[in-house]
Length: 612
Image 1 (tube, one colour):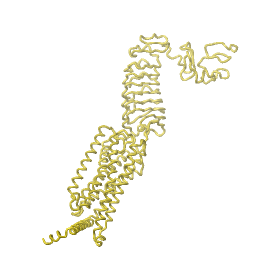
Image 2: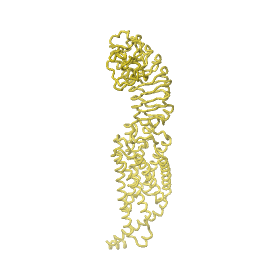
Image 3: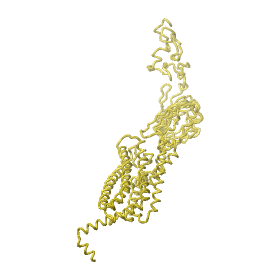
Image 4: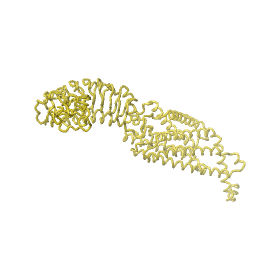
């Protein structure tokens, strides 16, 4: 052969030398002088196309069609000699056969499968298969691909297929993977159940699959997975995309060794083993942190909840021991504010308790919590507090002003009048809050925010929360402006009354405590409501915002008003008796000033009154 450069031996010819079987080419060993059988681009390169030839699996080796089933292994894995029994099998009716390939356009179950027992691989697309009973005839089967059929049950159908390496059942109707489903297929490397109807996977469904490398469970109906045990020594890829997971047990993958996980649910990555690479679609507002992230926030929330509860209970208690003449209209307003603040304390306690219960596993329970009735109750109570607090504080400021402007005739000083108004406000706001909460419960499976607040929606998908945010922010900002205006008006009239008093009497009365109370109320209203509303409106308009900042403003800053209110009321209650005496003296002075001005204008009326 050395001198026959152009001799065609129908094999691979070493340049200038002898011929070799194609199985010797690109097998990692030099069979030609100087290793020409391993170095030529035509056989070992990436551009080998094998036109009109048979391409060997997992290699660049190509062989002539005539060399198939010639009892000589030309491919490195000898696949050119597999399924050769079909060479002597006649093509079934309604099927098209081309050498060793068969294509059928009717139900495979109607075929005589006994004649195809040597098959190592089968692929049947869109043939309306409903059962795998024909597999018992294919005992040598290695590759099974049955996409786009109507198979709904697979467990117990692989008892005769111990050599299976790959099962692909895309786009079928499989609903569950039962216990020991693949116990007789220990060599399985690939399981593909993409786009099925799987709702349940038994924790021992993959028992004995120690060589599993790829598991695809995407586009199914998995909602609850308590424990997912992978017995493979090392699973390369686990795909869980497009599953409506509702609950994920924190220890779901604790016994699994997985290299890569793929999911569109970020919570999967929260419970994935630390050594696992996890690819997911995580929204900017989602994280694996606790409900109240950070020890500082937990401590502050717990402390504020306790302070609000304690201070408001003290304020309510002191109101019961006020002197009889002090139990006027202010008492009803103070009690209303205290009760409203206690409700907000109740919300903080719920959030604090939920954080402690779920602890580090909150991300896996977040969907359950956001759809829980307690979360909706927290929403309703927060909504009620956010509306009730500014309205009552505004009513209190207006009541003070009206008593100073018209101390003798105003209805605002009457306790029954005030209690009626407060009761109407409370009932109306309670009904509105319950209607909003009930509407959301019926139309939204879970609240968009884990804090269960009526003005946080990072998804920008719930129009009711958008409307609530605008409404509450408008009412609170309007209340701030009204309170500032009323307090200025009140200070102006108090100064006017003091100017009409005699110098000796004027020096004996001080408005420092009243002024201080007004300044503190205005300051805390501004500090609590203005920043929070600015952030809430910004988050409503903006695409992204700092979730941690929203948590601090919503939970902490808003709560400061509920802490300051009872302190002011407690101090006022302790000075009630002295304050009330001062107010009655001021009323007498005002009445005297008013009478004097009348006598100066009508002196004769005064004389007639004296004669009478």
